[in-house]
Image 1 (cartoon, one colour):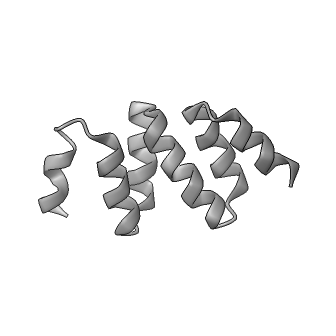
Image 2 (image 1 turned 90 degrees about the vertical axis):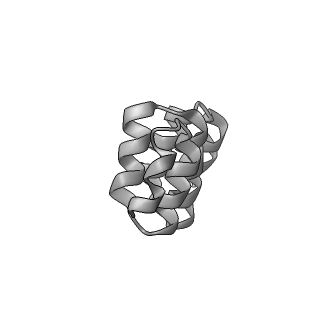
Image 3 (image 1 turned 60 degrees about the vertical axis):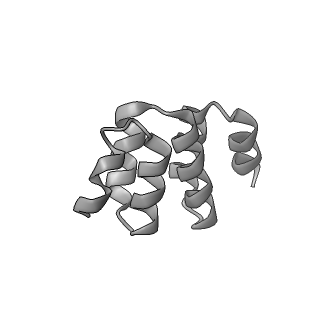
Length: 77
């Protein structure tokens, strides 16, 4: 995990989040979204949550990403 640490100070939240998700570190991915409120990172995480059928988590992340139409579509299911 130490080799990925360079992404965090670089300010590339989306790349950091993708690495955390790919390695299964979901709590660290959540921390990135919570700390930065980065819309692109939140959208990526929302899509992954939706694929895992974690509807509440996906809706929260869609809201952070300001992709309300995606959240509305998911909520209608």
